Length: 149
Image (cartoon, rainbow, N blue to C red):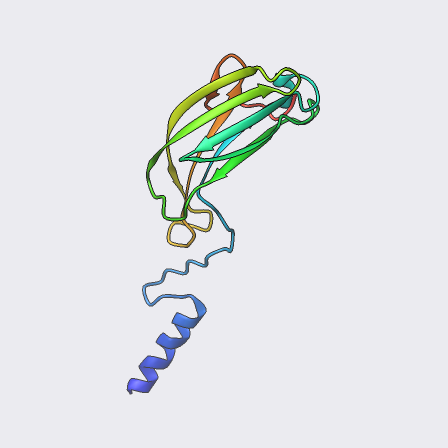
């Protein structure tokens, strides 16, 4: 009798079904903890007119602004996998490529939010924050950013 009971439970466990009726298959999307900044290249002038530098938690990444014909550009700083629900310091510096002058300089404390791309009970868990870089305003919310010029 024991063998008859163990076999169905073993099959259910191996196929991802539970004895409680929950069948939660996980997808395989990957995710990393990171802080990102997005911008409209047209907001910063001509082709690669500025250099955008983003620093988060002591690590920095940078790139040029891109083509004004592109709707949105971005740069991200990866955070350690074990970051968790932390608040990390963020610094944005936008510098003119032609003159070396600072166009935008701003800082914030980013409260990271939990992301689970494969479902609530499936790994991985990533902690993220996203800002928008805007001339004259610095780091702002990305809400309402239009993907077309």
